[in-house]
Length: 109
Image (cartoon, rainbow, N blue to C red; front, top):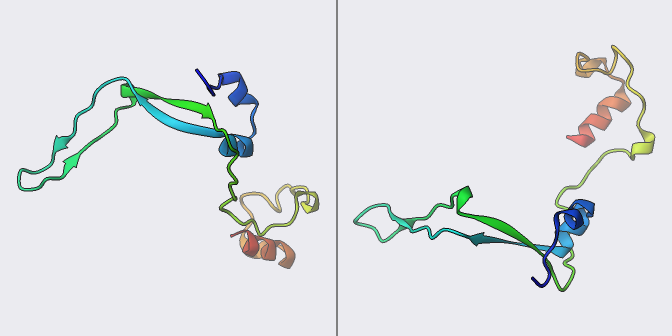
């Protein structure tokens, strides 16, 4: 099969490489028919059973450029400080934090 990928090749890829170089397609193994919703309407309902096929991954010819959809307004990871036990854990209230830590939370959310 031309362009087919193995599990090993996919597991070695990072997320960015996977998104930019792999195409995904649902291959049906069972014929599923559409169900009529209402006799007065021409609309039909079609569902896909998880056991009715499988997803096929193939390597694309051209690499797509995908921009991340989120913007992170946080400090770089090298600027993070270690957790202060009892001071910056789950039980800490917002106003117990320093002004800098509160500002960092404002930017993160």
